[in-house]
Length: 320
Image 1 (tube, helix red, strand yellow):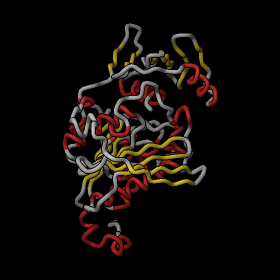
Image 2 (cartoon, one colour):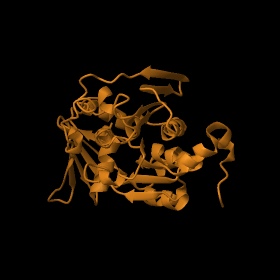
Image 3 (spheres, helix red, strand yellow):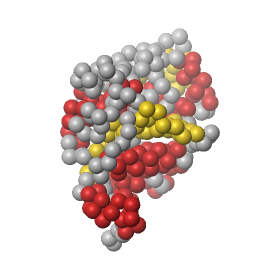
Image 4 (cartoon, helix red, strand yellow):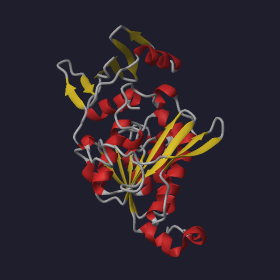
């Protein structure tokens, strides 16, 4: 059945709708944010949606995504292929797989870790592609359009990877209504960019607990290592992933972290996860996997069969 977009015409016109149907948008990550971004892009009438994700649907995804219980255990990109006809890649996005974004006119952030965002930011600067940073946690969200040579970039607000891991949805939680709100704002900004309209260099912040909405102007940093000095180092830095003799997988971040094990223990306790805490590491179980996290950010996962699973678990607890 052909979709009727006529309700869009009074706002963007028939020609505007035709422009959207000619565009290609890439979504990085297909979880709480990415799945809703795909949903809204499809309803918007974007011509082609490219999705890159390395994860499977889990039971904890159901309350905050577009997935259903029937999808549990399936690769997220496969579900989105079946439901929305996206071009899906069951891959980890890193410097070696950035070519998957080459066809896109715009990139939407649906990921959950800062390292991947820095990689996308460097790629966007190198290629001149606009992208939209989107981050959610607990009850709040941040959205920021990034247009190379026009707005501030992601490294203007975060020049380096944080020395300490930031809270994640796995440790700080996320309310089910937060991701679709952030995704709808992001797709609204994407629409303006795709139609050639101006967007401001500003961060949009909202908190659904206090019902606060704020727009914060973000100027370009005069000494930004990425968009000013063009030091695109994240196109080279990669996580180190090794298979150990006992079959476990070790993940070492591209830069050393300073993990507060006591704080992590407290967060795990709040989510009902039992742990063993020592002066050097914390050990706990995540479903079928045994996880050890060291103070420097190194992680060992026992029971993980492949790199994708190991990276998912790393991002869940240390990804930021």
